[in-house]
Image (tube, rainbow, N blue to C red; front, side, top):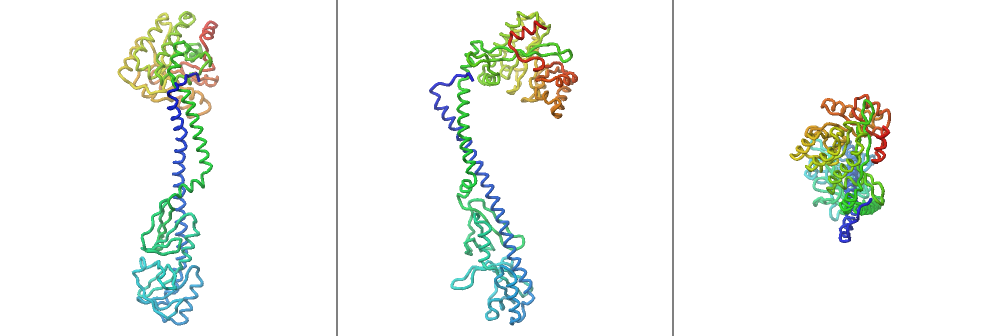
Length: 513
């Protein structure tokens, strides 16, 4: 791209922007991966708590079954037959360590101790009178237990689950997630210790789930730094990709800065050297297919780079504020080329030129158009200005004055690429326009995309209702031409009728016609 590079004094600024371009995708990517890792870990802990509750419910289900079976024995004499039944129930159901009978506040018979000793029963120890997570007592052989209690009047049946089974379940369900079983104020971790202190708070992916069948809950989470560990373990390829994208973004950013640095200098030089030249693409009448006019397109004839496409310099010209003088020069060159050959032109021949939002705020546009028309015999040329929609045109007093004076000169206004830009419908309301120019994307959809064709038909119908004339561009096939002619489109433009050519070829074609 033939644009000059900024001076040496701005290189540091360019290098800084390049660095930012390189870091931005990396930092943004890492942030996205961090959030994704948090979500994944949160889903993992949520699934783990569900699995833990399912497993613990299964253990308590066995304890509940045993309690239901032995509860009718509560209150009866603790003889050998009763003790045998208690032991058989324990051996027949997994996870259950022991079963006992209680009457009032005394546990008088158990599968382990028989009737040798009587233990005290404190109902306040049991959450909802049903579940107690009991830690081991100092200097006692009894291990930590989860005790399930089933009541019937003054009698109770108690079954226990050893903490060995509980801690095994908490460890095996997930080795990455820390799990805690909480029953009332007491809790058990996968380390196997029952505590009555405050339940620890997990730094990462904290999750809690209460059982719907028994009065306990399971809490899960991970320690600080687990997100980064997970990212390093799961996303090494993505980290490499982010580094690559960062380097690529930095390179692209550096290239674009070189591409766009000091565009006004190079564009101004080209403008002074008259390197922006007009190309002409014919516009034909829909009914007769005869030439009715031509759209004047700006091209950059660079001395070393050759012909430069307009999409490479028009946006820069608009950004630099040079599009207005460039259009003025284009009108002047067009008049110099066509005025000596105006006898070749049909009366009222349309000459179409694109204008932007910058033109609509410059009152000199009226004088430029007046000078252009004065180069031709009265009525020989109809000048049409097409409002491009790369930038939104905001109505103002200056804009309305410009459009009013243009209409008084006989200049017509068209909306280019109708239906694809900023606010085409608002333009119909705010500006007094004469033509709608249908974008080539809708034309290309003829016979291919029914939805786009319906939009095309709606635009044509809208123009008829508003009394506006229609120009369709981008016509490349006879089928597209025939469809638009059948729809009553006034003017047609596209490669089917002629490609953009330089002035010499265009005038030669006019002579042949």
